[in-house]
Each structure stands twice: as structure tokens, then as C-alpha cells.
Image (cartoon, rainbow, N blue to C red):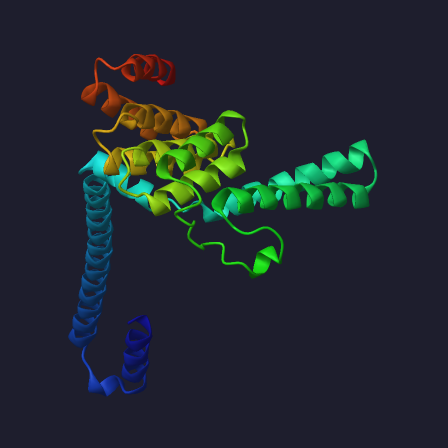
Length: 278
């Protein structure tokens, strides 16, 4: 605007006979008016930008507020179904192997002996599992189908459950887990299927795999709501969440236990846990 105005002045100065004094004043007033309108438009544009930003902020706030509402417990249950223990399981096993190797190096300084002992122990464990689930001894274990069904004449429902529970009681957790999983595979409709699933969860809990334990407890809660392990599954699931530092989920589970089974012994323990967490 200023440049145009100066050019007009220059032209008028060169050709003084082409314009009158009033023309100068008119042009000057017009330029001043245009500048005022331009500033007004800029202020209006700035105000509109601020209004748009405020509107976006309000909409985001409303969106966040609505996102935090809804069926809280249903979201929690959905989160449980999506739990994927594979990464944590791999990390846990890796940490255990590293810790075992470190301890062995510190205590013996002999890496070869450490791995020899580990291999021997694994071979004995594999042999126990093979004998337990009904594989024939000998041969290459890796070549065998790990999911091969147990021969029915090898072990009955009662026998399989009994030996699995005995393995659990003597802290032979790997054998117990294999046995209970085989039990659920062969006898999924058994009256003790909920117990087998619960003991698998207990094995993961004892070993510190709380995410895996939570999933197993949820299987008991959802698939066997009237079973004799449902209350215990609620309680141990709440404790597992607490172990992971997820106190919000822990309180949801424990309070659900108290509401559904207020007179159960597990509910009494749950009330104590709730008071400790809160």
C-alpha cells in the first residue's frame, strides 16, 4: 500500500498539471481507509483462528471425557482377553537363563559344567514328561509330535488328574503343567476341568508369570462360573494384578468377588486386600 502511494505521489510530482490538491487529499484518505480496513481484517482473522483453536480444545476435552466413561468392567475383561503372555514369558525365561548363567559363573567359574548340568536336567525332565504323557522312551524327542494324544489305555481321567496334582504338590511344576494341560485336552468336559485350569494358573502364579496366571484365572471365571474354584480364581486374579502394580484392575476384581460371593472365605480375604490397596 505504502509503495503504491509513493509511486502515485511521484507521478503527480512529475506531472503536476495532471492532478489537483484535492486529489492528493482524496488519495491519502483512501489509503488511510484501506490500511484501517486491512488491520481490521487481520484482527478478525486472528480472532477466528483463536476461536477455532478454542473449539478444537473443547471438542478434544469432550472426546476425552466421553472416552473415559462407559462399561469400565467390560473394558477390563476385554483387556484380559487381549493379554499376550508370549513376550513376557520369553523375557522371563531369558532373564532366568541369564541369572542362572551369572550365578553359575560367580559360584563355579566353569561355564561348561553349568551347561552340562543344565542339559542333563533338561534330559531328565523331558524323560519324565515323556513317561508321564505316554510317549515311548528313547529316540529323538524333537522328532516326536509334542501334541500326540495320550493313549487311553495308558491313564484314566482319575489317574491323570491324580498324578498331575501329585506333581504340583511336590513342586514339580513343569510336569504338573503338562499333565493338567493334557487332562484338559483329553477330558475337556470333566467335572474337574475347572480345577485343572485353576492349578495351571497357580503354577504360573508361583513362578511369577502373573500375566499368564491372570489369563488362566479368567478362563475359570468365565467358563466355570458355578465351579468350586471360581471364588479362588477371583481372589488370585486380583492379587496377581496387584503384584503387577495394576491396582485399579485389582480393586475391580476383588470388589466383584465381594459383591458376588459376600459370605465366602475368599471374600473376607478380598476385603482385607482392598483395605490394604486403598
